[in-house]
Length: 156
Image (cartoon, rainbow, N blue to C red; front, side, top):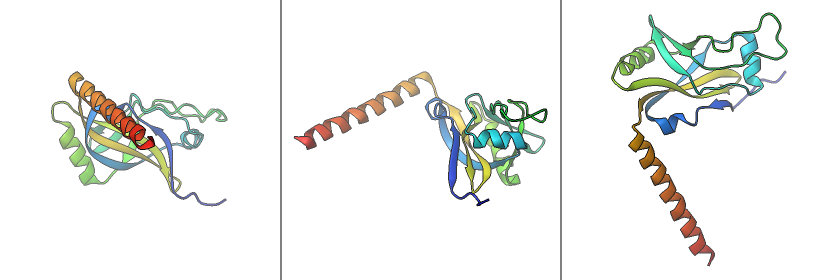
């Protein structure tokens, strides 16, 4: 069997960039069981309710839903179990220190395979206020309208 190369996206948390200001991102390995890997290779996962918690010097990914593998037997996994993240010690210390601040949290942004290994992109984030979200939507709308006007002008 040929070895996988490149990056294959499994799941992304699109709403995270709308709800949070992203301060810093990290790529972490993730400890999975066999049926979890097979379910991910089938392209099934949800990062919507996910978050990262540091406990006794280890980073844990919680709230991420990886559904049971349909072909699995009694060895199937629990869909929302805690999963250990593989990070360097200094990264864990930085994440723990930064997430202690008020309004800060650590969230997963994407789950993907790199050269056959499961990785998760996590981010140190600050929650946005409602007016920040409205402002971002307004800016996006203005850019979209400007692009449309320029393309109309170019086509004439």
